[in-house]
Length: 616
Image (cartoon, rainbow, N blue to C red; front, top):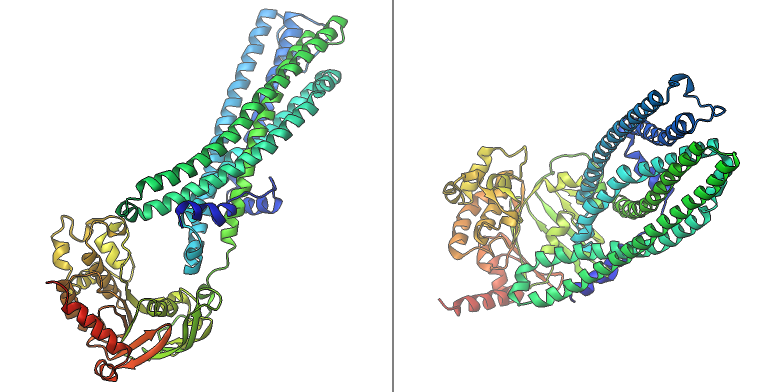
């Protein structure tokens, strides 16, 4: 299945925004994140009210200047008359100074409002990202099996950024626009109710234009969000598998697939841009028509003596101020639409039930003994397509139990169930005499040291990867573990020794040395149970020989389960468990199973034959 078909299916459909532009329930949940910062929110709202009020004061000052000094109307009185001089020149200077002071005050209110609201938004988004990340860490492995990584990254980055825009430029800005409209219409009604009704006659046309814009913008926005999500998932999948793409000369095909996804994103953006390109000139045209009506009816009122010239000039300024918030409200519609879509996806993640292992009850405590037992365990990843069937066995205290079998026999699944990455459907697994479902999951996993076939190494330092930055592992423990894993000499040869930077996934190390870091990691934490999952399959014979010499130390005093592909690595195992098609086929000591002539004997013969015929 190609990446394009995978990304374009269920994943894309899940990214479609909700039909509702505003969801009160979602808004209440979002508002809860503002409660710790309600003082800052209150200050921001006060500054917003101040800015909106100051913004409608200017046109009124223009009216006062015209009616009092430029074309005096003695019968026209204003609340500012006692504060203004009678001399026209002095009066115009006073009005101009007052206008400038109001502009400066409005600038200051706007500046501090933006600063405070963005500060609040960033703190809120920091809290939300932290909560999302914490939630992701308590979700079980099956959740990550079902979800593309690109989608998860989008949740904690793009979707949260959209919500930040809602807080900083959405809801608050909408409130500012509504306040500006309310104050402007209030001033217009005070100056002339008749002229206000004339101006409002264009409101139905404005509402129709806004409705049509929202209808087309919503469709474009939905397509754009789905396309962005598809690009994110495609890029994540591509760069994760870049070596395979290059190995099979798949670059051109991948480029073609990306071109198709990218073209879909371009078309979605173009649809939204086309809606904007049509809407804004339309609103400006309606605004100009409204101003033309003001000039006609206002001029007529001035000629007839029912209006003053200053009132008409002020009305024209108010008209310009009214259409700017209308344009902004249409733009904020997009922000609100994006925020509701982002909020729904974020809260869908936050509402995902945690893995059953994370909800286990019980008091932390050490295991009652070092025994591991599987009792009639059945497991399927989906429905009743059983991967394990009626599996029963024990790993006795201080015993090394090896697990072998063909690929797909269920060997690694045993480890995933033991550590509660997945939940069994039937039976029980006991660790130290306690059902693992009765263990708090962190306490359960704290009992196990594990070395995987391909240990994951993080960007950081070698010491940080061995100790995993655990407070229980100090520098001395890291060094001892490196020595026991025969890694210390190599580390000391590095320029920064244990503080040598390591690239993501340990790209700066060979496969063998990455495996040795995994061994050192298990040794450093000193857990009572040990799991080796084909832990020597990636190392050369010489390194494997060095590792075997440390196994005595590594396995001493621990109950160990060793999953092995190379049968040569399990010769000292106390017992060997043979898995076949999800069932326990054989169990016993090495010589006993060879003498039996069953599956283990055949595996041993095939591998011995393969190794003996391999070219030197």
